[in-house]
Image (cartoon, rainbow, N blue to C red; front, side, top):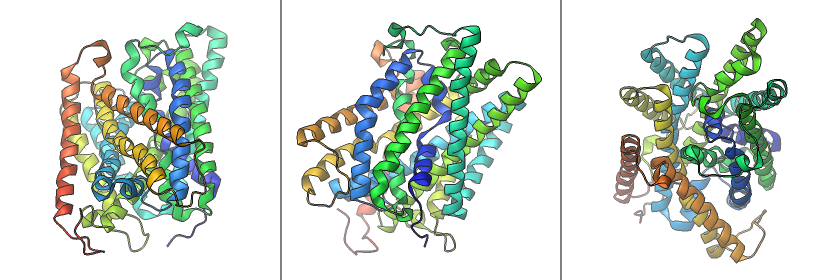
Length: 463
């Protein structure tokens, strides 16, 4: 068993790597200059209470189950099974979107005529490379994620600082007036849920509590990661918008296009574009490694309780890693890549459809996590809480409701991005909605299966 040896810095880097996603930075920039106002608003009314809630739950209920354990304590086994299913399977659904973006950026950099089949092969190879890295060792997996966290800081800092330098020499590519910065419901509102998505995942570090030196350090870990992540997102978004007009920000090629503008067409500029492009690609892999590690651990613990199929809980005898959950994640990712590749017309369309679908599944556990926090505050008030969210119960209820509603609106806008304007694009919405409903249905099948079986550890029927 791995000893508890990880302190604040490596855990904060692990959390930073999980939450900081370079792949959707262009989506936030696609909102326009008003994305800066949205960033500040979401940080103030959502991320701060989310971080406080995560810190309390993680330190009060340590263990590898994380969000699964919290929901189980609050609402029972049935809702815990649903939570674990969504939390785990979304990684297998999200991985194709990230690696499709990888393949598209790779083609943009090195092989503009790369065929769709070749890009699909790249995606499948990356999927199984991720599974292998998560299977071999927790320590190696953490080392990879920490390395990629540093690379993410580098690439986003370059985009931000480079954007300021470019603007100083050539002028800004967009208007940055106070009116333009203020949050607004413009044509880019379809990408607003991406901002919420970009800031989720700080609770993932709770699955690493057995490797921590001191669980009381959790609030420091969470808020160090939150502070760095928030600053980098804002700086990165600002850099892209200073260099590229909003209408030219592509979801797949946006980062590469920005690097080309920042560094120019000279030999040094081309070298920097290629070098930083490769750094960006590496961060995509790190992101998938960190999420696969965390979500598979939670799923494996649920399987050991008899709440998911036994194969999900299979653990490596040598490395104590959740090889069963990791392998199934790889199989799901591969299947989704092959299926979606048959229907997409463009890389941007393919990336966003898959991203929206997986993001809806990803956000669903949070619709349970926030109410679980409030329930545990009321029903388990006597539990030791090394860290506690300040304020009376009125404050706790308010922040719970606000966080819940922000997650709910993100799910709705991912599926119905134009609903705020009174219209629905069924060509986009229907595949995403059907994918979400199908995933929910599979989860319900697993739940009914569990109800029919006795827990292998307790011999009691799950109710």
